[in-house]
Picture: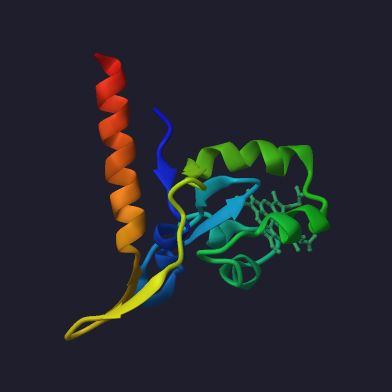
Amino acid sequence: MTQNYTLCEIKENNGRNGKPVWIIVKGIVYDVTKFIKEHPGGEDLILEYAGKDATKAFNDVGHSIDAIHDMKLYKIGVVDNECSQQCQTVTTESKTHTQSTTEQNCQRQKKRMKFFFCF
Ligand code: HEM
């Protein structure tokens, strides 16, 4: 089953403080944490788009068919547009992170609906 990720979840995985590096290209979410060191275009270029939509930058480069083929290795899911709402920045005692209660509720609701329609 394809995993769905909201824009808030993706934004959290921005490569900072040891977090993974996720990027979006054409609505698909890629975990490129291990790949960035091998990227022929350099690590920094991808890091600029960590946690963000890199579609335009990716297309503008005119990546080869081989590069497009390699992307499959890093696919982890798709953007959950239905549940992607406004992100909130929450500061707890020791750290700041983004989360959205509305997103979490939306995802729970979707899971419930899926379960309901299975029976
Ligand atoms: C999963 C994502 C990506 C993969 C698998 C990937 C893969 C590759 C590969 C294999 C090349 C060598 C040339 C080619 O075969 O086209 C390349 C070059 C390049 N990539 Fe990516 N890339 C990714 C994401 C990005 C992103 C988000 C950017 C953003 C700007 C980017 C910028 C570049 C640039 C500028 C080059 C040209 C390097 C040069 O010719 O000097 N790439 N990439």
